[in-house]
Image 1 (cartoon, helix red, strand yellow):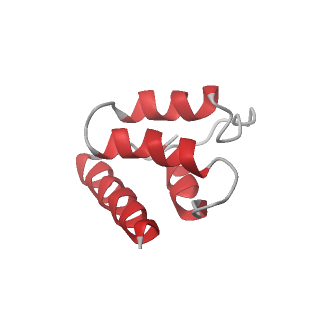
Image 2 (spheres, helix red, strand yellow):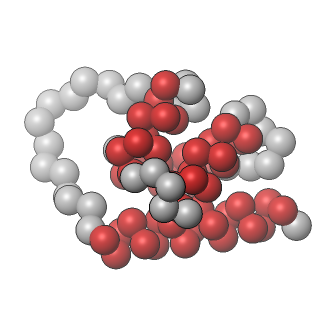
Length: 84
């Protein structure tokens, strides 16, 4: 989940298909209006990120508060860049 959102941020380009929707959802997340899970499911429901494929069991690193803070900063920086 976390990795898919990071990938969505990395791929965000102003004017690209889905940019406005991704930007709006991630901006709400970065401002603390919604949590990571809600942002993820909103992106899935709007078909702005691909549904994950079923795969074998693998160890997933838990997302820390520091991870989320870095992600929020990255989102806000990306949106700020796109405004210029």
